[in-house]
Image (cartoon, rainbow, N blue to C red; front, side, top):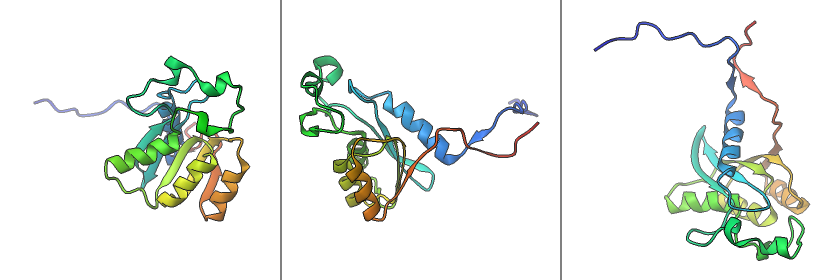
Length: 171
C-alpha cells in the first residue's frame, strides 16, 4: 500500500466560502430542479451547519410538471404573488418541510435558506414548524409575509450575494 507523503498545495487565490454563502449557493443549485415555468426556487433547512432537507417548487410527485402541461396562471395572466390557489405546484418551502417530515427529521429550531422570501402561506407553515431564522436572496411581492415572520420573532435576513469568505487573504 502506497502512502501519500504530501498533498498539492492549495492555490493562494482559493478562499473558502462562509457557511451562509455555502448554504445560499446550494439553494441556487436546488432551484435548478424546479419544474415551474415562472420562477425557480430552492430551499434548504439547516441546523448546526448540517443540511436537514432540501426542496424546490414544482408539481406534487406523480403529477405532470408545469413544464410539460403549461401554467394556468400564465394563461390567465395572473401577476406573481397572487391567486396561488391556481398553481398546481408546491412551493420550495412547502416541499422542504414535507421532505423533512416524510423522513422523520425534526426541523424545530432550524434555519431556512431560500432563493426568495417565502409567501404568506409558506411563512405561516415555517412559523408552525419552529423555524428560527430565514436567509433569502430575492424579495417576493408579498409584504405581509415579512411582517408576520417578524411578528413571530423569526429573524429574517436578505442575504447579499457578494462573496463573503473566511480565512486570511493571501497576497
